[in-house]
Amino acid sequence: MLFGEFLSLLVAMSWTVTALFAEVGSKRMGSLPFNAIRMSMSILFLAMTLWLVMGVPYPLYADCSTWLWLLLSGVVGYVVGDYCLMQGYIIIGSRFGQLFMTLSAPTAAIQGRLFIGEQMRPLAIMGMAITLSGIALSVLSKGKEAEGGVHFAISPRGIFYAAMAGICQGAGLVLSKIGLEHYDAALLAQGVDGSTVPDGALLPLPVSVSIPFASTMIRGIMGLVGFWLLLLLFSNNGAEQASKALRDRKAMLSALGSMFFGPFVGVSLSLMATQYTSTGIAQTLFALTPVLIIGPAAWLFHQKVTLREVVGAVISVCGACLFFV
Image (tube, rainbow, N blue to C red; front, side, top):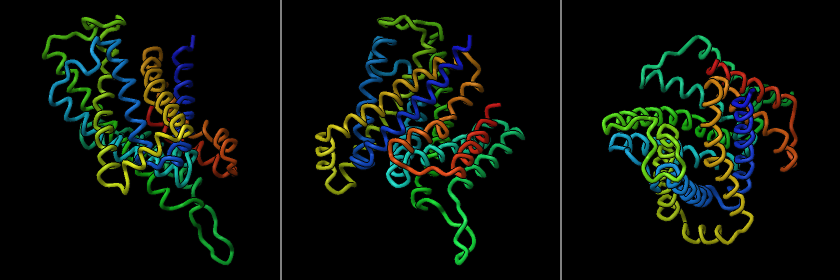
């Protein structure tokens, strides 16, 4: 049975739906209100999940080092990364926004080499070149004969935000990995085995299954605090923006859909997928989102899709996949 591969495809589809909801919600609310409200919803769902699997609605066993690294990951991956991603969705849409998320793989590889000594294989270097080539093919177009040369087919400002989002996701992943290593060390220091079922857990799952959810919650707490501070302290009429967003039924449904299919369903299925198939195969199938989103985005948002853009997206995804071969 190819159960793990099937789950991995569901993850890619789930993240596709997340991006579509996020584009609608961020355009209606604005980037900061959307992220602040979505992160609030995410924390509530994660607290309920931890209550079921750990018996308490907060991360057990995490020490100060674990909190430090995962909070730092939350700053980079959520506060900066998600803000840039939603800004990118507003300016250039979720289809191109997801294309630039393929930059997370080379960023994670470079950061992993610099900070935790991970080796970069020749295939990874080749993957970087292919990923960048695919992105360039999608976003660059030939100028008119009178102009000559090439120019951006989409907003350079949108490209900046989307590229920053992909880079921050890759950097946040490396910081999360360091945080998870500290979490494992904290478990050992407290004499907790990965197969232990926490006292009071309503679902008898081992700690090893619960830790990724607990780590996600720590990162989410940083995202929650960061987005609300940015909205209320550094945004014009932040409280008014949030109040208006909360009264916008379509925007709230978009935020709920983005949160449910992303941090909740997407993360849960991705954890399950890696239990039934190899991490490389799972990550390769996860990376299909930039291709899967082309059709739905074109249909829902009435976007014109060129063959150059489709080929560029496929090439970029193939480059990202080389990091997991």
